Image 1 (cartoon, rainbow, N blue to C red):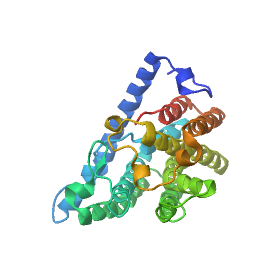
Image 2: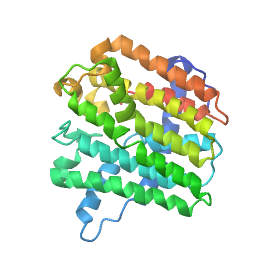
Image 3: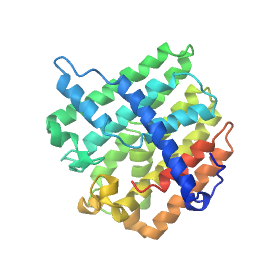
Length: 313
C-alpha cells in the first residue's frame, strides 16, 4: 500500500494504484462475506422462511463497509484475536435489517437493492418486516458470542452497550424518524445534519468505536475515533446524495433520482452539486488527517476512507 496523506483520492492515486486498492477492498469484502454468512441461522424448521429471507438480504452483497471499518480500527489499535468477528457479523445484520425496512412500501418503496429485487418484493411485505425484526434480534445474540472469545468481559460489555445505543432512538432510528416526518417538507441544515449524523453516521460510529473498544482503547481514543467516524458517515451520506443525482443506476444497482421522486430534501437539494462535492472533500480530508494522528498503522484505513467517498456505487 502506498502512503496516503490528507489529499484527494484522484490526486493521491494513479489508475494502477486505484485498481490495486479496489482489489484489496474486494478481497476484504469477500472474506467478510464468509464471516457474516457463518453466523447466520440455518434455513430449517418452522422458521425456515424467515431464515431464508434473512440470508437473501444479507448475502445480496454490498461494500461491507461497517464490518470492514470495525476490523480495520481494531487492527490499527493493536487488536489481534477473533473477538471482533461476532460484532462484525452483528453490525452487518443490523445494517441489513435497516435496509429491508427502508425499502418497504411504507418508507422508500424501492423494488431493487444491490442489483436485485428487494425483500418485500420476493417474500412479501409481512415476511420482509419479520426478516428485519429477526436480523435485529439475531445481531445481539450473535454479538454475545464474543464473551466466549475474550477473557475481558468489560470490553465486550462496553462494545454491546455501543451496539445497543447507536442503532436506537438516539441513533439510527432517531434519524430515520426525522427523515420520515420531514419528507416533502423543507428541512433546515441543522435538521438535515441530524438525519445524516444518525440515520447513516450512527452505525459507522458504532463500527469504529466497537473496534477501538475491543482493541483496548482508552476513553480518549474512543472519543477521537467517534469524531472521525462522524465525519466519514456524513461524507458517505452526502456522496450518496450526489450519486442519486449523478450516478448510473446500472452501476449503483438501484434507481437514481429516488430522493426527488420521494420528495426528500438532501444536502444536494439545499446546496447544489459543487458545494456538496466540496463538503465531502473537506470532511474526508479532516478524517484522514485525524487518522494520521492516531496511534498504530492507519494506512489502509485512510485509503479506505478516500475510496469510500469517491466511490461510484
